[in-house]
Image 1 (tube, rainbow, N blue to C red):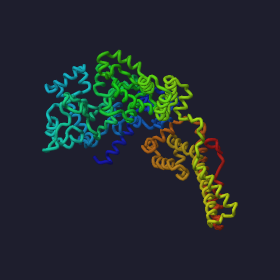
Image 2: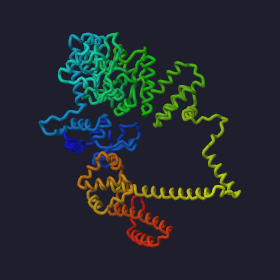
Image 3: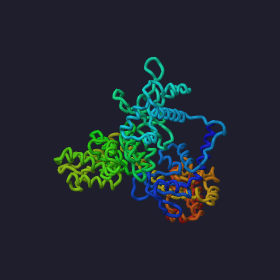
Image 4: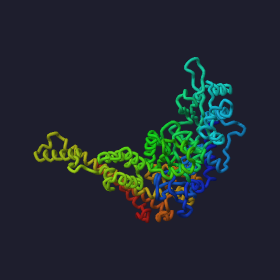
Length: 639
């Protein structure tokens, strides 16, 4: 398909989605929206931890913005962030949910398949092959294993489990016979080249197969395989990194767990069988990593669905260590994940199979916060911990504590430490903040300031002794340099002041241009791009000038949609109610005042050069410019 046609097609779909999807209705499916004004809504942000709502939705402009974490955009941006999707899959998600037809290029002509689509098709073919083998006589050993683990056939079908037979190349031979290239199978870890003799062999052999889906559950992105005999190593084998699958970014069963995460939270486990075993007993909100430790990317994915997280790792020492490492990642994101302490060294699957769903719920209710879990483990190992050891524990927690921005969570950690270590809260706070100083400690030496003092003292001594010309011109050069530096600072301060003074006016102008047809008609016929001090504002103005009839194209343009999401979400302020004439005059005045300052600076320079003719010309222009400035009550109370 020609790229230009594809681009137009995608833009048409984007505009249709923005027109048809009610942003408040969509976001209301994820968070509880509260009306906060004239058809505007607020909520606690779904993308970061907060207690006071700072997340705003403005249906009239089809935008959202969070004043806390600065997330913002339109419905497509929201779905991309919330569902962890790329741009086009996010549009497909919205089109499917709201019954929007995805346009086809030249009906009857098949769309060219991308490399990723081809990989998805091959994975789907492999999944069907493995599932069929599980139900065949070849899969008897795999079925027996599932029965031994208490997994019903219905649950096995729900998770699309399969079996990879013992033969060296059964899947490879099947797909090669259908004109699939061996290199394609190698690229997605379905086959590997033989080290001798040429040809390819199946990557998964004699293993129970766990298909791994994308977060939407539409496509198989990879596989996990469990060995069914002690001779086969490793015990678990996973798809290697592919364009579809990176184990550091994928969570097994998140495609199912996310639907209940808002109400029930998410249980993080260590393995596929933990997830399936829990599902067998009615626990639908479990996920697992795919042969790797939990990563920051995993934490970000989970956080986009819920902040109620349970870490249900194995009850042995390795499981406790993994829970602590994972818990620290969540704390860094402001989430105090709860650690589920499973007795007897059992894993979640063993526990729920032996004791049932009610006992599992009891474990969840008794779960501990991450720091509490760590402290209890330390105290159990060192029941008679002396003061130096307790101080060392606090020192170990200090970097973690200092990296947490949520003050309520920090307070909870301070309280837990004080309670468990039998220390006064103020001492704990000082130790965590690193503010406890040795009693006899002297003041730290500021080496830079000491050097500056010595330099000034040397200058004074040189002047007192009449040695200022010991290095001809050196002192004068320093003084001239300092004068130039001071002038540069003054000039920089003036420029910043001009920028800051124009900011509220320019932002209000852009707001009106985007929302007020009458103002836009008048303003675009009077103003000049030079009126804008801010480069971004000038760029947006030029775009609006080109799209006078369709300002929404600029508002939702990928380059500026976050700017407009924040701008249009701000509450109405008193100065924003000024008339169009007053606002235009104020903006023009700022430009003219800036021009006056430039003329004055140029006149001073020409006077120093003795160029009196140029000074006279600049004086005439200065007087003419000043005449154009008319007093008006402006934005922010400025006159």
